[in-house]
Amino acid sequence: MGKGVKHEESAAQEVTPAPRVKSVVREYAEALIIAVLLALVIRTFVVQAFKIPSGSMLPTLQIGDHILVNKFLYYFQPVRRGDIIVFKFPQDETRDFIKRVIGLPGDTVEIRGKQVLINGAPLDEPYAVYGDWPVARFGEREKLGPLVVPHDRMFMMGDNRENSSDSRVWGPVPFELMKGKAFMIYWSWNGPDRNVRWERIGDLIH
Image 1 (tube, rainbow, N blue to C red):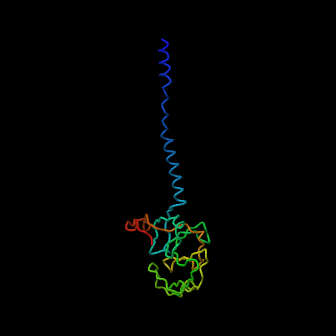
Image 2 (image 1 turned 90 degrees about the horizontal axis):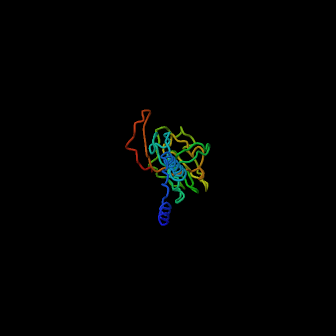
Image 3 (image 1 turned 45 degrees about the vertical axis):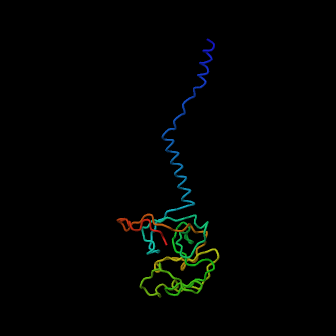
């Protein structure tokens, strides 16, 4: 009889409570929190989305283009002439601007009519567009320099030269205001009816 008691006690000791099933609500909440944190990290350090609201970068970027900006690229490589960069507007850092890098630190920039010169040599700009209005209409914006770009700044210009407020107006942009390099159009629509421009979606930005 004593042996039977010992057997029952041994069996009882082997029984463990079943693990509690995590509630569905808690699982969804944790997944949502993780997703939000990942999104914040990606937006802060990796890639951020922007919308093009104006025509200063036509025809490269059109009004209604939605673009992705690489925010970590310049940790590994220097800014290059021709890069299209999003940056905080020097005169109001709550606003974001997008322009093309024309002058790098130490470059001598000159503008003579519709010709940009870098260190005395004409710059080849297949992306730049000008209207038919006479140069005189734009005054000093089309007759600038020579000026030397400071060591910590970039000279920026919009591709739509006659409809762009840029470094010709408010000077070179400090590197510290840079947000990142635009690299792809992920969505695009046109006009008040928001007709989708399917042919632009997925285009790389150059």
